[in-house]
Length: 267
Image (cartoon, rainbow, N blue to C red):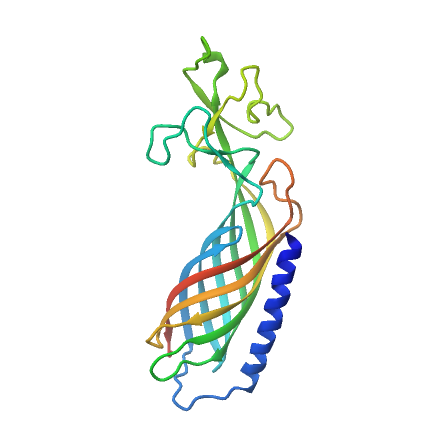
C-alpha cells in the first residue's frame, strides 16, 4: 500500500513542478485585483477517512500567500471490516443490533494545525474560468484515541440458550479479552457495536502532518471562493497508533479530494 502512495506522490510532485515553472513565468494581469487575505472552510474525503477544516491566507506578493490550516479528521483503517450482528440487525433506524468491527481497539480522530504557502498559478478569465492554486503545508497533528466498545452477551443471563442482558466492554491492554474477541463456551457472544456514547476515556498521541495539493476555484465572483481541491497527505507518529489489536502502523499516507467555500478580502 505504501508503494501505491509513493507512486502517487511522485507523479503529483512532477506535475506540480511543471505548474510551478508556469507560475514563475506568468505576469500580472493589469485588470487583476490584489486580495490581501482570505478564508475558506469545507470537507475532505480521504482514502482513509474524512475530515473538516478551514484555511486562512495572508498575501505576501500578488501570487504568493502565507497559508494557515486547521483540520479535524476521522480515520478509517483499511483493514477493518464491518460485520452484521449474528443476533439480527435492523439498520440505522431498525430494532436490531448495530454492525460492529471485529478486532478494532480504538477509534482514531486527528486534530491538525499547520503553516504553508499558496501560489496562484492561473487567473480566471474576465467572464468565466477557473483559478488554479498550488499549495503545501506542514505542522503538528494530535491523534485522539477513543476506546471502541462492543455489546456482548451477559453470560450470567443465559438460560435455555437465550440471553436477557448484555454488557458493554472495551479492549484491555494486558487483560483478559476473551469476551471482547467473542470467545466463550457459548460460541460467538458479540451482539454488536455499543455506540458512540460508550468509551470516553480518551488518550492522545502527538505527531506530524504534511500535505501538498492543488485548488481549483470555479466561483463566478472573485471575492467568493467555491473550490475543489486534490492532493496527498501523510501523518507520522513516533510509535504505532493502536487502532486495531494487531498490524498497526506509525505512518498514515492518504490522497484526498475536498470542497471549500469562503471569501477573499482586499484589506
